[in-house]
Image (cartoon, rainbow, N blue to C red; front, side):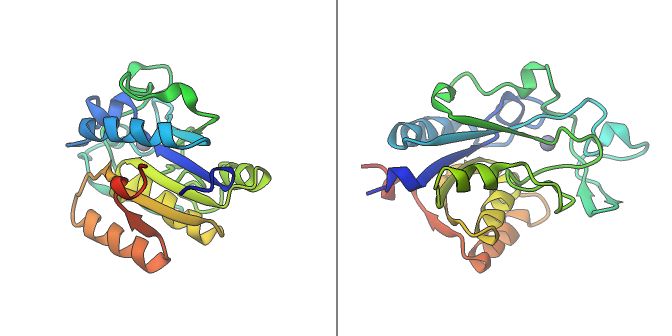
Length: 208
Ligand SMILES: [Zn+2]
């Protein structure tokens, strides 16, 4: 049984761009009905929305001679280059129309600084710039976050690991996530989450 007052469901990046748009993640459409069932079970629901300017540093189109999934070195470390996605003001950035988004109490937008990517809902990729989510959760007395969404091995994993490192209990509902799985990223993310102390569950263990 969930302790609703101290618990939130964090729904990561279920946007057109990642479902069937510019950075479509295979298998992501089929998690949406499951995520909707979970949203119905939680009193506190928070959404994240990837929200880039068109000239964002993470887009391969903004780097001469680069291809999708190439990597570059930035001041803050290695950055994977993606197809241009979830640009502010475009349909690609909107929540998918099948997602029951209306219950959300908070929408955390991320990736809006041109020179910093942000996989995590808590902290941008420079590992310094906070999004404000930790403060919000603390002020509301929410100590346990359940994370679902896209993609398992990037935004979900980074969010979950940051949650634990910032002192929250964190459970990833694995079959309500969808991975990109490029260059071994899924295996690494699962191992990193387990090592960090993230709990892994299935949606049937949550739904009542
Ligand atoms: Zn992005």
